[in-house]
Image 1 (cartoon, helix red, strand yellow):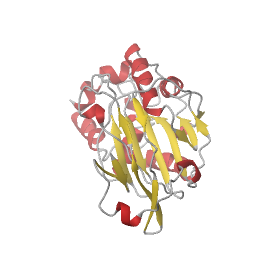
Image 2: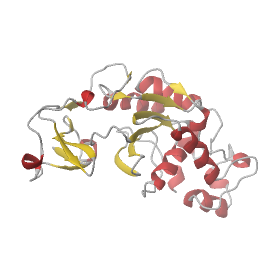
Image 3: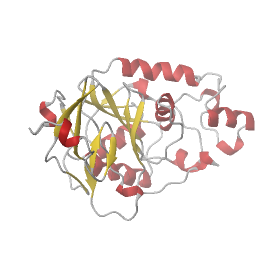
Length: 275
């Protein structure tokens, strides 16, 4: 697989030879200066870094290079690859939704309620580790709620916590089962439109809160363990709406508001909020 500007194909682009330098490019020497590394572990993903060559496109330093390729996988979805250009001025986010909790499993709004992972949630967090193994990040961050901190430690290692990465505060609806909510409330949450709970926050207020955290990040690739509502807020801003399951990893070029990849957990969990 070859990639250029985040578009992948099974062969190098036609202009690759004509527009690329013949010198190899070390990603670490291309201005990306990662400092955070997770603990190593066995991984089903292998990265082929041979023949990485730079191109200059619109002032952005990009690469045409072999991409991360999965090993044997049971289905096409598990075999999805990720490719990215090297841009030293971009802010790239790897967003990880925490593993399953009893609330996410049973269709209960948790929000700021501090609930632990289930056994399935622990397994989902551990399943993220192979995807992150060997990757480097300028920073590794997490919401301060225990379900994300536990996911981070199982999937990566120690991280810096920040309450601005918390889930949306559902206020008066915290702890309520989805099926018991008024249809108008369910519709407001499902569409991310018109939701203003007592003692909670609107989606716009939550976006400002999370945006304040992102505004303080330096350029580079950052690993962020957070919640489903937060990930949906950010992917909506990039033109892709949808609620991701627990244990999902989403790559996002925040500078260009572009979703780079989505990888759902190989360990399934109920999705009651889709009903």
